[in-house]
Amino acid sequence: MTDHHHQTDAASSNKEESAAAYAAAYAAAQPDPGHRVVAVEIEACEFDWEFVPGVTTRAWGFNGSVPGPTLEATVGDVLEIRLTNRLPEPTVVHWHGLRIPAAMDGTEMVQRPVGPGETFIYRFRLPDAGTFWYHSHFNETVQMERGLYGALIVRAPDEPVFDADRTLVLDDVELDKNGQIKPPGWWIESHDGREGSTRLVNGRQEPEIRMAAGQVERWRIVNAASARYVLFSVGGRPFKIIGTDGGLISAPVAATRVLLPPADRAEIAVGPFAAGETLRIETLPFNRGSFKSHRKPELFATVQVGAAAPSRARLPDRLREIEPLVTGPVTPNREVRLGFGLGLKHGVEFNIDHEQHHHAEPVRVGELQVWDVVNRSPVHHPFHLHGFFFQVLELNGKAPEFLSWEDTVNVSAFGSVRIAWMPDDRPGGWMYHCHILEHHAAGMMAHFDVVR
Image (cartoon, rainbow, N blue to C red; front, side, top):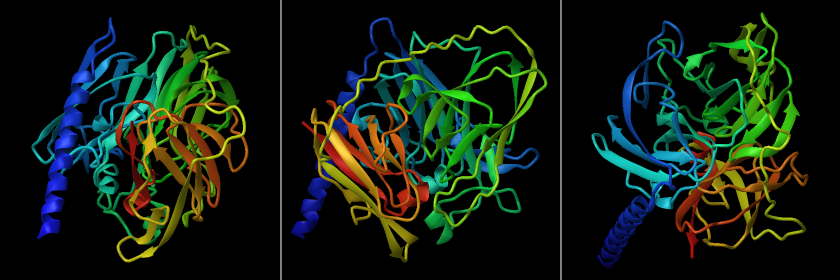
């Protein structure tokens, strides 16, 4: 009886603390001088959608589309989103990659789920330019698979000039013989995560993209897939990587492919191409340790290059200055161990530090964090840290190709990644987890507190 009262008291206290933190974060979210409050209404609802032309699928999404509307604002603006839930089950919205107060992060840890028919208002200032996204963080293997996600673009006043700015949200779905999304599977799917056979760009199967010859475009690519790794290629043609999770990198990097694990983003400068060319946007074979293998390129979309048009694109040699958090030898202050085992609930049970839904030690505001994320399993894992950017110091003992700000990084099978990040003054509850949805659901996630 005493234990029950203690639990009730603790629950009431947590609710009161969460409500107070939310009220404080809401009131503190004020735009910079000369900036604005961008008010948006989004409705999570069920509707008919054509992933495949001519095939009607029952989908879930925001404002009746998959993906939901692309939200756009400028650094220094305040984004105020009024979410109404028209679904038959609760939901929450996570603002992936945004450095916002913990109370606005959109997880069950910091927010009571928004029930059917209820409304919740998120409000936060936007401190960083970049390509971000928003998605359900409740029953993700169902809600995100059915379409509850969208892109979020934050612009800066001094960005490079391109002939077009295009957002490509990549996903896949697994449809049954009636064209409906299959329910979650077991065993192999719990091990691999779901890779659907229908590949999507902006909610449509293998669309055609038209681009003018002679022009250079900025492509903002979001991998919203449950588990698919995308080794992104534009017909093997060269492009320049200009940004990653946390916005622009220091200088353009020439490439012919870029790896995007689930939840990752990249910004690339594409073109110019010649009139009449046809190019394949595809994912190249990549072995991530899954049972399902990909032995040949798979198509996401086709680019048709039309008549020539004048170009005004200007891509400078230096895009941004990024100061390294670590400049010499350093001793990590945390090892995050990603592991797995077998269980009855999910088939394959994933864990962090030998525990499902691990509660990790807190970190203190202003104390540099250097973590070794070590993968003890035979499959790759996209490691995602909520609310903070980190710098990758080492990938399997080697320095990365370039310095960048990230919130998601691939940890290869039996490999390790060393990251560094600084907890700024945003105390509260946060999490880190594998962003393969089935691995997250099966226990590969951890909660931790940032404390003053």
